Image 1 (cartoon, one colour):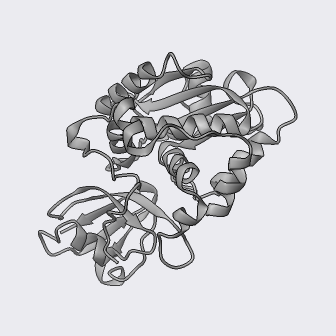
Image 2 (tube, rainbow, N blue to C red):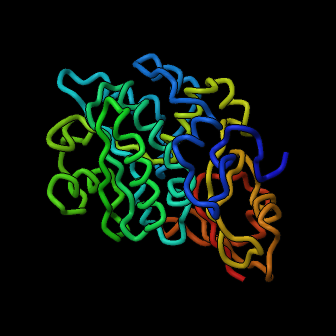
Image 3 (tube, one colour):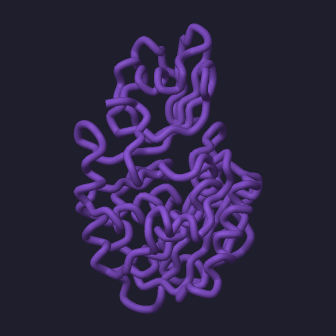
Length: 295
């Protein structure tokens, strides 16, 4: 199996990011209209094994269920594309190329958990992604049952943390809060809030179309599915790639055109990760973080 996936209906199967964002009409021709959603989708997402792509790797289905099982009142869905991690560009690439896939996922999540508002939270410095999401929201303005609005996240490493997201939307202050309640209990405007990474939502939109078995058909070892990674440094073709879970670092480097210098170390997991000697990692299975290499 190659490191770079080219199977139909995966996240990066659509138009090249260099071609600009996909229109709603083109999106519907390629994938079909958004499927009918509802609470039953939560079980499908749970059984698929989809894990969150924001960093924690928590079960997406369980996260949706925790909000859906609240006692009363409508909820809010926040599609989190702040992506403040230095050298990571997977979320902005996805939003810039396939904004309607992200919106499909957010609207399906809203239908599943009983939300009456969707907020797209995109990094203010990711101008192409912000513009793509803004256009996509406008294209759907006359057809959505759930209103969607765009909030630009401040340029700060911590602004994508879930409580910081809610705090900024509520009070224009993107600092995390350390005291309860959790956003899933009381978040935006005091309502139960699902804060979900945009890649996670895009995967959910494809699972809703293709089923849990389709999602599990990709991946090696105990973790199913595919993931977007960012690879940079001493690499011939740096950028965002979609890979099977379980793909080794050596395969990722080969799929990105190979090294342009003698790589000595690899930074795993961004700035909360750490450097490791490349000889210790060549056959290490991939995880969902960005990679940066040092020659």
